[in-house]
Image 1 (spheres, rainbow, N blue to C red):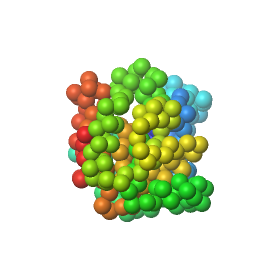
Image 2: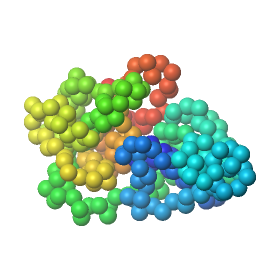
Image 3: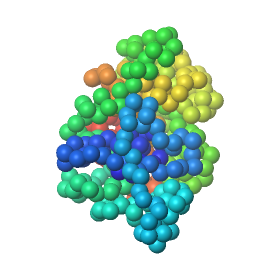
Image 4: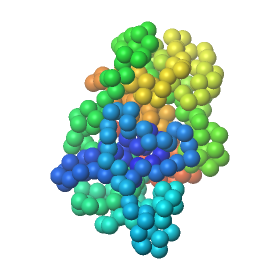
Length: 287
């Protein structure tokens, strides 16, 4: 399974690979790509996972003929699948793949797999696999108490490369103040005594967006595993168009949680040719 992108993307890929390997009774190998973004470093170790990494032979004739010998075999990660000795399968759609259940052992997989349908049959295992309970002792007790209150709401503001990289902005778009205002208004109807825990990779932008919100706490100075853990301990969730906060909401423990997610998961032009309906679990509110 090719592993790439930010932590949320990696979790989708690993969960899908785990489910398929389990169904086929075989082991899962991962092929982590080297990415240029700090947030895209391999992060599965935060869960205590020790995935088996595929290490192709980059010294032989095949690697040399493909231009993947030596160091090039590491840096040209998107071409490394050519060294795989078996069949290679690329997912065509973002959150759907009719062929997935029929794939055979020994297949190299590459895709997004952004739907719980890819691992629905072992969702309890995935929750256990992505448990961050060991992080609890590192969280400020007051923050943890806020998150575990019955009216707590995690709110995620995704900026980073969505805002700073023109190409990324053109694909993902940036959710603005009006979206968050509408999400907050709807959530306050559902949870009248809402207490907000605000997470962001640009806390200054998040602070400005929520400046006049009562009962709001900016969550700063934490690692990504601490943020993900604290999100999951909140009672309800307002996600960004981000796989990171998707997982924060999905891993939530409140069986009666309200989750508000943006219908516009990508920029408008990108949505014209990207199917996203199966990204959202049943019961989530799309705004």
